[in-house]
Length: 286
Image 1 (tube, rainbow, N blue to C red):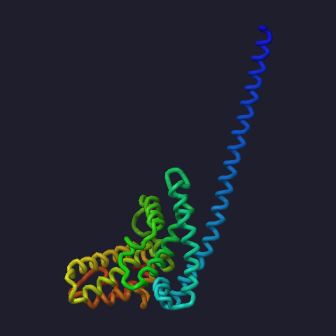
Image 2: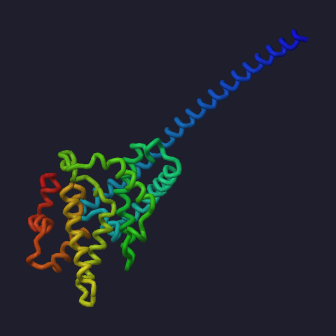
Image 3: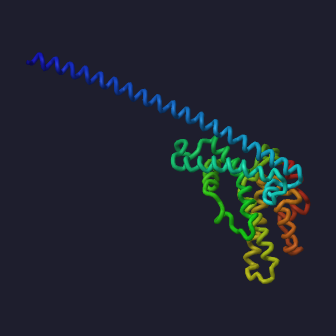
């Protein structure tokens, strides 16, 4: 009986060892499959991102084409001056669907530890936001009577992309370097809500001209704040020189603002505009 028990125990041990080996093999295979799945997911993600970049290249061409015609791509799209403006809507839709879904996925399951997005996607997402959000702003203010895009029109995925980008780059903040100055001619405006601020400033100018407006003081203060905001962007080489094109909404605002302000009004922006220093700005020599 004792011998039988010993044999049984040995068989049980052997069986247990076999089971452990099988379990280890299964775990190793599962781990390998997970790694392969992640690699395939990464490859698929890069492939999709590359396809999206083609749409971005189309918008880059559109931006350059508009500038060659003497008008910025924001104002061209807002006013639908050319047939190409309608084509842009298709590219914008594809890009927005991709980034909105990607941001939602990243918010639920961050791409890496300590950050919602890997740098490759964050960089691409920042370029997308700076290129495409102005088009959304153009659509918004194209509608009569629209106000306050920031509160009433801005998509959550833009807010998150901007937040993640700021969290990533705030430690790198500093004065504009020579490379940034040299490349300003082809750059995108860094604040993707810049044109919203321009539109609101245009509305404020109209309100200030309205003699029945009882909030002239607060309206004037908003315009002064906008004036300082623009100068800050210029000093940091953070706006595209396209804003200074003759037919741009910004230049329209400046003309309206000139009619409102006193001749004695003096400010850095007034000096910059009066002396046409934006020509040096485009060359990175301001």
